[in-house]
Length: 227
Image (cartoon, rainbow, N blue to C red; front, side, top):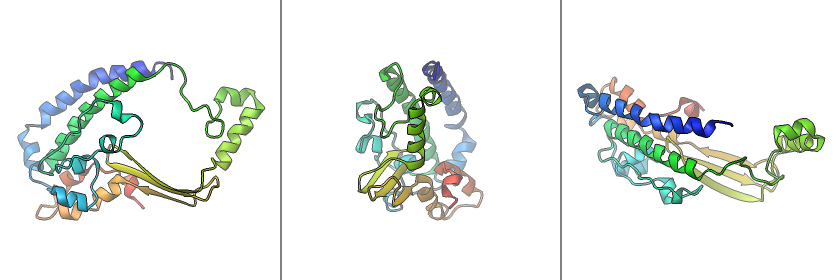
C-alpha cells in the first residue's frame, strides 16, 4: 500500500531506542536477574532431544537457525548474526530474543533497500489472483477469481515438508497431494506446541511462582497449543 515502506522505515529508525530502554530497565535489574537467572534451565542436549527450536534452542547454546542452515527466500544474501546463549535459562532466553530483535531491524533495512518499486506478484494465472480492480470491471477476471478460491490450485502428486524460521521457532508444513486441488493430508509442525511440552522438565526443583517466568520465557502462543 502507498506509504507502507516509509512507515516501516520510520518504525525501524525508532525501534532500537525502545530496545535500549527495555535493556536499561531489565538486563541488569536485580529483581529481573533474581527471577530469571538459573530458572528453567535446559541443556543443549536436552533441548535438542525434546525438539526445541528457535530462540529457546539457541539460548541453550545450539547454533541452529533455518535462515542460516537451510536458507530460503534469499536469506543467504542477507547479513545478520544468530544470537546464541550459554546457560539455557530464562535469562538467556530473554537476552537471545532482545538481540534477535536488533538483528531483525538490520534484516528489514536490507530488505527495504532491495525491494523493487511497483506491484509485486507472480504473473501466473494458475496460482495468482486477479486484482480487485479487474474483478470489479471484467467478468472473466471475476470468474477466474471465483474458480481459484472455490476450487484451489492443482498440485502435482507427492508429498512435501517445508519449514521456516518463525519468531517462536520452526514452523513446518507437511502436505500430501494426489494431484488434485485439495490436499489428502496437511500437517502443521508448530513451535509453541513442542516448546511448551517441555515445561515439566524446566519446572523441576522450582517454585510454582517460577512457572510464570518459565512460561513467559518460552514465548508461546496459546491459540497454537489449544487442540
